[in-house]
Image 1 (spheres, rainbow, N blue to C red):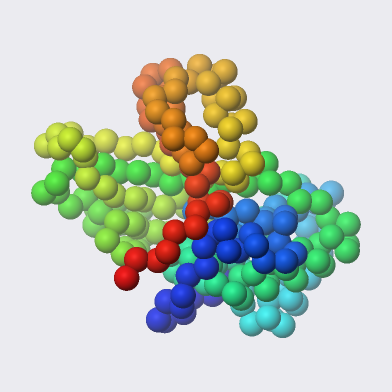
Image 2: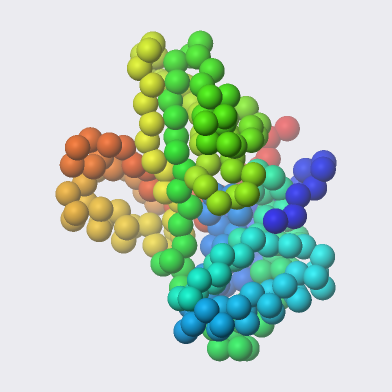
Length: 227
């Protein structure tokens, strides 16, 4: 994943999706993703080799997860997962090559999981989480895996404050066209809808009251970057 020293201007998910030739791609936490179905490990490696050649040509390098059943590709420009023009160019070139070779995309295989840690207003638990997970601090709220494999940790304040009572919940980022089906399946499996801000996000409680947020908003957000 390419990273620039002085974070370049951010491209919103809406702007990314408006670029030609990126229909297979979805924007989740930490970047733009595509999953192509493969028949075997060698089939997936063939696609990975093609992606490597395209990345060398574009000069922008994605992350690849290669398995016998498929290959997942992630691209971003900034360390915080923000997108830029090179991501759109890389995505277009990869999609063109994959389709020409007969690969089929499957957005239902895409998701990114994060751990949300709530803390009291005067507490600072992020260094603990970064240390115990072997992560690096990013910005004011996140701790991330330097290998970009494990779930990120997002630390936020409890509202209302509850001193001495830390809480965690799971955040699941899904493609916008897959989120409602996942919510329905979770409710059918015994979950309880706690809050809905559809189509942006849903909060669901497990049968034993563990919290999970399903987030679709990263795939269509169009907000301007804060100064």
